[in-house]
Image (cartoon, rainbow, N blue to C red; front, side):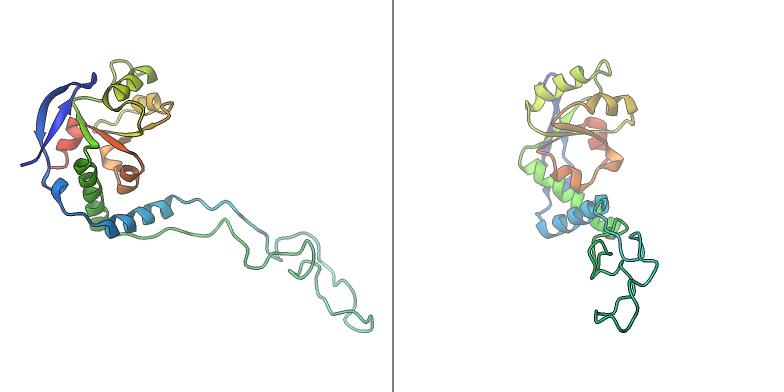
Length: 203
């Protein structure tokens, strides 16, 4: 049976923990990629926005009469054919990029991603990630003791808003509660630092 080393906040090994069976599952890159893309799409917020002919200003009257001028017929200066007219098929901030993914696939992809981190020795279990004082410098010291300056995802079992606030100023680290953990966050960070209770919740 595979085991995980358990570290303290100073970066020293204090014991071990039996690893969940899913950490040894064979890789499935296609599934992880599919779920990763769906989560990224769901996080996407459309910003680019163009106005169509019904939204641009002006154009309340026909520019010139239909016949007799020798010019082409036009009904509105808001037509996409005109300068400053509406845009045809332009980007809209109402576009919905979300993708549906079923819960079983999301769960399996998360397990596979954690398994990849385990095989690469990038999954570390810590006795307790809560700092003695809720200050950024104490949390930064713990992260540096464990992995240096590399990017890390801190996974905690206890929902603590103070912990989230104290980790916001860390440039290469992000804190997440174990119930919110997903394959997108796991693959976006090099190391996963998980407290012991969080890891035990997977069993």
